[in-house]
Image (cartoon, rainbow, N blue to C red):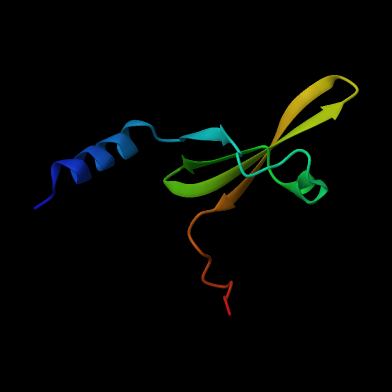
Amino acid sequence: MTTRAQHEKERKKDEFPNSGLLSRNDKKDPNNPEHKRYADYKGKCDIGGVPYWINGYIKESVHGKFLSLQFRHRDPRPDAETH
């Protein structure tokens, strides 16, 4: 038997396929040079039923600022062994 919370979670998961969200990365300190490579935004998404982590980086070009995105599988890959 499923609980109401589990049912709502499944319904929401199915309700918004191929979508995700980004939030500002509060762990990044702009005054710390070591944090320069940290993502400006972090989040997660679901694309084609596959869960991903998203990193967003604010970058600048001759045309102005833009947001660059990086996607990584949320599930550990079987060929990547952790020690």
